[in-house]
Length: 413
View 1 (cartoon, one colour):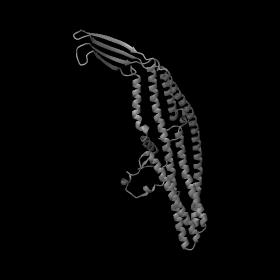
View 2 (cartoon, helix red, strand yellow):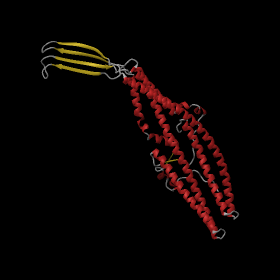
View 3 (tube, helix red, strand yellow):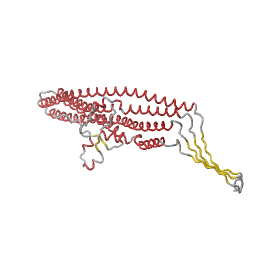
């Protein structure tokens, strides 16, 4: 008897419907496409362009000549409201906020660091989404394989039950044998129902990330992600989660440096002209004003800003050290999982081959009356379990490689 297919089609795909009608309902997709769909629905993805525009505007503001746009001042004075008689005084001036010493350069450094941290934040967010997609993706593959094997087991159990019923009627087997065969079929039906439910739950969990009810992973062929090269294994410092924390620390230190020079409010340069008339008919005098407004120091408020920025920097650096240790441990664990999964797959492949051969031998001997039913049922169950382990081991290898790529911070390809 041939080996059961681990990638059998789902019930919806088995229906005989025209391809043109089926295409809009179910479309096969890859892991990369699943990730892109899931990422497009994330809040970070939807706000990415706007946040990048804000970062670009912050860099432009840090490179301007003034800390804030200039302000226009208009002032009018009169000793007789509602009349053109008496004294008049009109003043027009411009107040120009000035940078504090060192503030402009440090503001530029902070804007650049914030822009870089924004990019690393998005990449780290993509990696977190990828982890969830990969987890649900391979869980769906496992449940799909279980469903395919459950269908195959049910078909074999039904065939065996029909054979036993025929031989019972012919008087070759007893009613107890028929009950055993019918019991095996009932067990196969229950297993199929459970596998169907597990597959539907896994598929719905995956689709909840994608937002597309008509999309289904392509389980007709198991496609492994590329194995990471040795260079990627030796460079955990480039991991997006670690880079995000280091960039956050850099932003905090730049903010602390900026706070160290912002010890007071920004001074203002005032340039104004005043036109004055003492009384009606008198000549108009014009004067000019050049002044500067220089606030006192910020005191405890400025020190609070500096201390807060330093604390955030230290928090981010400490988190980065912990994250580095976690990443190294995750990489080592993922490598060990690959070796273990490959070993299990090799062993499961041998067991399944032997089980298939034994299944064929005992099926033939049972038809010839050389083997009793209990032995036939035992061999059938062993063959089913062997195929189940092989299908799961095959998926475990693919999932282990995917887990290694995840631990290295690599997105699906």
